Image 1 (cartoon, rainbow, N blue to C red):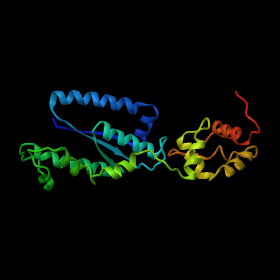
Image 2 (image 1 turned 120 degrees about the vertical axis):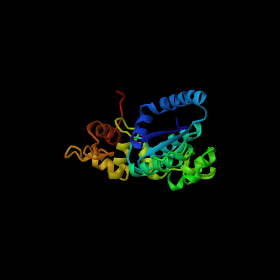
Image 3 (image 1 turned 180 degrees about the vertical axis):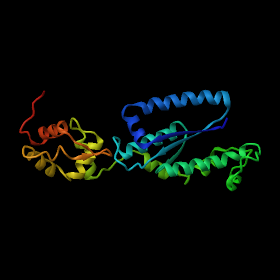
Image 4 (image 1 turned 45 degrees about the horizontal axis):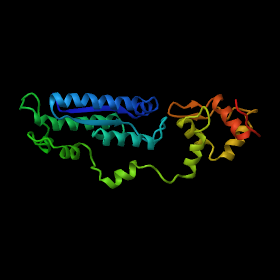
Length: 232
């Protein structure tokens, strides 16, 4: 058995697992299973491989994805690697395969890649492993700045955070709305025209480009155009 485990997850799946809490359950299960494997088989190195762009529109903000990945890296002591697409994933796994081959006895039917000398067959050091597989290596300062909580927000981010409090809105719908209407004045003006058209309802949101919908539009209309509010 190899002493390297690759945990592969797409960005959209990572986002979905955070929303429905599977992410935390999976992390706990991984740690439990890994403890059992290490007890029975010795030390095992885990690569947490995330595939996809973190800037694509998902139900979780990019900063939330970074936080989840950082938590996995620090709390679980996994080696974190991110690829932009399937081609980069295959290239990375090929590199892992090339460096694992030297750990096996010579086999005339399995040619060793020329790069196999980078990892000596009788040595397996965690730091060397990280430097070879997870490039470029990251020092504490940039890591800390990447995963610490944000203290200052742009006007656009504050606008999105306020929108996110409205019933029927999620992160993807908020991003779609803020891209179409740059501020509350533009959004309110569009909502007041709602009797004549469905401009706001038809705003496209998220990767699937689904409509904002009547429910979210009605919530925003009540919040931004009502003269007074009543409890329902």
